[in-house]
Length: 79
Length: 150
Image (cartoon, rainbow over all chains, first blue to last red; front, side, top):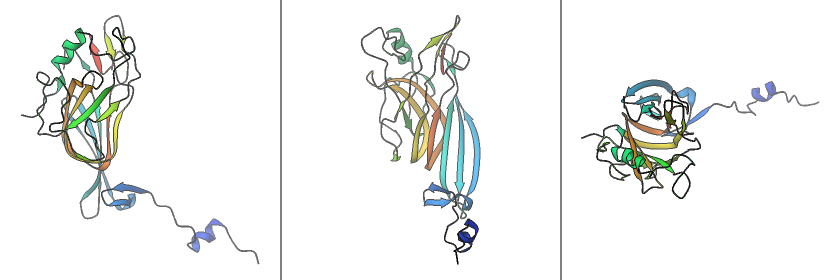
């Protein structure tokens, strides 16, 4: 009898692990789904800052990405 | 005293002395200069009036960050309209998988010309945790050029 090798049957038998997106953090690679994503913006002087916090279940921020956008400036007439 | 944002007065003087070359039309010998970005903590006291060159004092320290910072990609040529001149870097400066605390100030400097300072920018003090830090500049157009002279 020919073996049933459809993806459905393989997953049922746990032969193919279900891929879960991971993200690098201060605690190593963690499933994205286990973290709370908190984006926020701030503006100071001539820089716009966009932060992305990833918070673990215990409240610790285990990853923070920071993106800065520097605003244009007139060299002769600074804002 | 915390760092103060703005273009360095020494940089503006050095522009008049043709020391900095942002593009390939270099009247002195050599090609365009290599520009770099360095990060500083809130303890730093860089100011447009007093900062004339890169310094390692109060520069951030951490995993994934090397003293002196990173090279800023620059393939854009300074350009002009009938009323202004402008220039923007062509790329984004970035650090990956970096962990640094209290990043507050960014210094742009000319690594080719004895690390002469160009400008200082402040941000809300922030720690980067096992993450990415990117610095993006405006598009290289007349209306949004990073440096505009008009």
